[in-house]
Length: 126
Image 1: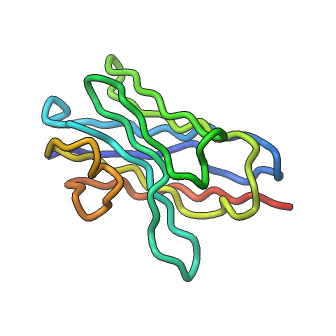
Image 2: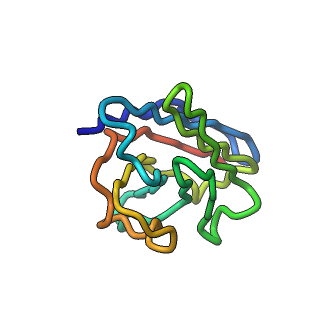
């Protein structure tokens, strides 16, 4: 089992920045990749970005590309999502997920993930 705990959400003004953290514990050696997803009210959960645990390869949704950076600190078993130039449409609950199965191209698919955190709210005011 892997446990995930997100933190760092909050209220920020448009054009501001936030850094979300996702701390993993448990069988972290089994993790292949970790991803960030978000869900706004009345909308389906959508992919934000992902990173492979060992190689650090990253990928981003077009909606956040150029404004967000995912990084990891293997010593701390933590993945970060740095978001800059935030927009009101970035308002959502952000979830961190972890997956054991390999396959970089499918890290965009939420249903392939094995573990999820509880989510952290990000609210961007105009």
